[in-house]
Image: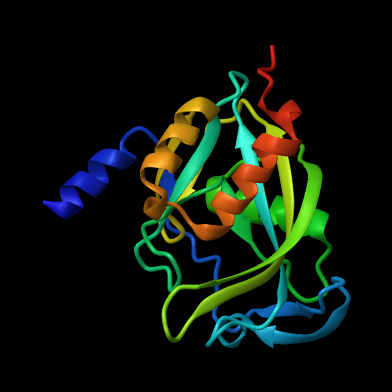
Length: 200
């Protein structure tokens, strides 16, 4: 039954099953000033309380000003099945942020989008006794008319939602959303209202 429900949710979206994440991919370790201090494989960087590493979060809106949300795949080590912002990941060793965000948006959602840098921040969030996120995260936003193609290895479901509806849902059911998304959303709503304006 669960598999049937999952497949039904995918019928409205094109999808793929490309393998794009690897536990041994090298992440960029940074200090609190975002200065590179070394490199470490992804699995190790998330052990325990996590080691501070560079990351990014992307917010893609449609022309009506609705945000594209993704539900993280059930196979994710951290926060599987939680709803989150459009796309988030890490630049790899030797990869510039502009290259990384373009690569990952294409890998997870088959999309291209002009993205504007908004802010960066540090956070630590503990998932369980063995794993956590500790990231210095760069946040970007943009608008797109493209239809996504979800990668089922990374994303289990997609939906568009208005900012007002997301505010209400996040207030009523905060446990359903990833911790970084909640932090970023609050700051976007407070400091970057320009990203919510519909595009003609």
